[in-house]
Image (cartoon, rainbow, N blue to C red; front, side):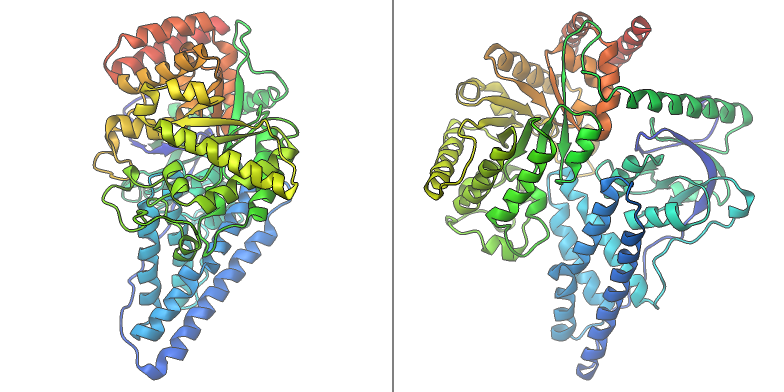
Length: 603
């Protein structure tokens, strides 16, 4: 598209192009009243807070009841999550205590607790869990609306709905419930949305992707740049927004929409085909999941298995630890759903930066002194992942027994995160053996031959693969953390986030070294970070020798189509050329040129 048209950029959800008229939502920030109350007004203030929570629960329940049976699993899951947040004692009980003990108004008490909870989430290194703070803010915002005068948190209709044109929502932020309401109940054609904040792992972004809604998030100043009723083109594949386009650009965008519709129909036909390259080399395409229900989406996308089941969801936002039986049921459900396809379950990747509620932390028996449970100056380098599990042996053994029991119901593999030292590998294997002995004593069944693998997320692990290949059965490259640790970048610090570069030569050398040496030792190596689902990096990873990609279920079919266009010999030549380059910009240009050549040769 011509560069003369005013453009805005952000993070695209990669769901195609939408054309419509802008509708601006009013800023959601509130002027929070802060005042002290008399002792005899405490009961009334607590009652106000209780009533506001009850009204919001009713709103969410109404939305939950309206979800169609054919809707993606994420739709109900996100509403359930908001209901769970609403019922969490840290949000519903703690503010009441603040009202009673400090004699302050309900709004003030609620926002004090909101900032405390969000502070804990925003200290988390893992991007997915860090972005859950936005879910908490969205829930509290709905409660504050009710406290402000009983107004519903429903999204208003656009003023230009009577023109018959599609609507593109423009807001500072949107919750999943807002998106659902506008899509299902607004009475207008909802084409897409733009927000000033948000990122790839926000639940609103994930929901938009699962529902196929074009959206671009994280566009700074979009509400100032766009006027009510402006015609917009939202290109969620490139992350660009075109303001007030002319007739020529509109015609080109409509052509692209028609082509995208045909392409998606073609992608659905790929579900039953075996993933392989143009020259017939088979490639495994696995799914990353967070919830047991995501396994269904993985199957529907034609995944060859689950390459990464993050288990943290069972432990977060609760005041107790999940029991062995609760964990077993969750893991077994995924194993059964996948019907014999492999399921890689990662042990708990939590620590001082992924904070458990105080009650759950206190419930972890067997902790040694100085466990790092207090604040740490750099939690990304603190007690997390396998370090945390080894510090909490009872918690670790409970999870290992649950995973082992689930192995009876399918092909289950066990993945240990953030291994860096030989003694960590040996201790993890010893804990698995101990958990197996405990199950034998109980006469409970499990797969005695369960495979144990390790995540390569620390440069020291990538450079010292000997202990890994001798003692483990498979390796999984966690590129998100590997990039962070290699480049000394705290992804939670926006001032240096621009330096987070997946194509940095040092990062690529570590990835290539791991894939090559793991392959020489006969160990399967997968990539389960964001790079695995990035079509621009597919040929490079293939050329490095990668034959096992693990990604979001929504990315599987596009990557499968991409693989059909690639030749492994050409990919190997590309990887060799890139290995001699020292500038990420030069590397990106080389990938783009190779992409054009591959697509031309495939037609």
